[in-house]
Length: 153
Length: 144
Image 1: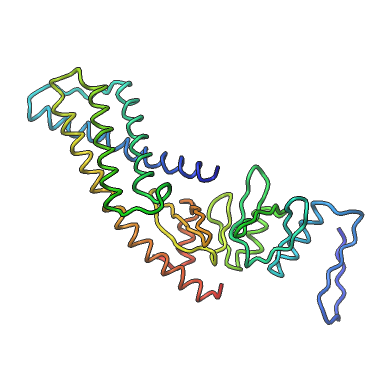
Image 2: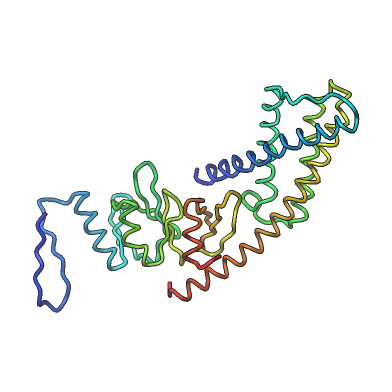
């Protein structure tokens, strides 16, 4: 039960970050795309779009926790985790693109750019975070051992 | 409750005279045991004396407090703030609103998103230090 709650808690935090990233990516790239392609970009965001993004963010966060942490899969080399994660992420984004965004063809290029950049960005962020957390974690654990010795516990 | 202190004895002895055993009495016993780094825990209606060295962490679940050792779980009548008072100077640390962990039983630490920290215990169980307590924990370990 605790493990499930902890897992859900991590997904919630991660989904919030991914959701923010998706919305920001849409706004920034939408603005740039409309400027370059000379097409109209309104700042209005349909409610259904937010719900789709939320669902996507939760799924990405769940796969992140499954593949990029040792919470579910205990032992797997990190590069294999990245390969699996990026593969699933690409399928997920492509699936969302095909199901939800296939109608507005004039914006197809934007969605492909967002999806591509998002996959690359997530892969880079996950590698950087992993390296940072490992290094910091090692330093924290060293400090913990020092504390144990010093306090004689 | 009447407290009588008789000085001039060679050993410290605490005798509790009461009409019958109650939660309050058990709590007093647990607190007294705490000074001796021992705790009274209940499992399957059996009372056990638990050495604080064997405790991995304390947790409050649905207003009940539990003691987790490597492979066992015992219920205690002590409240978390009482546990914190007794054991904070014995290497225990409040890692979240509902948990107090034995620092000696932490195997590794890892930072997490949102200012939290992941703890892996020596029995491979994972706990988190919530953002609220993370700063205090870092200060205690001397992490800048």
